[in-house]
Image (cartoon, rainbow, N blue to C red):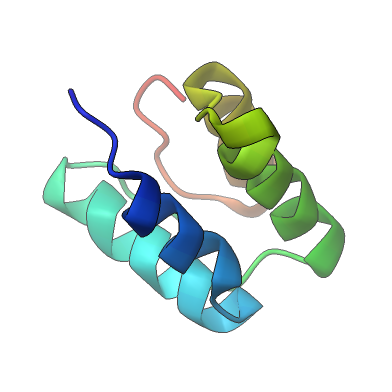
Length: 80
């Protein structure tokens, strides 16, 4: 899968609520149920760091951040 650097820049620039809505929408299209509630700012900061990290997308780290949030707040992470 090719990662579009412009999309990464757009995602990390979104507000917390907008970023979570986009992640929620993307997850839903792949059959992954995430909590509706926007994670706290510190969780989203960790997610942004994983996505932004030195120009590379750290998918495992991003999935881990989301997975921890799902375990704490409900939802079906399906392997996250």
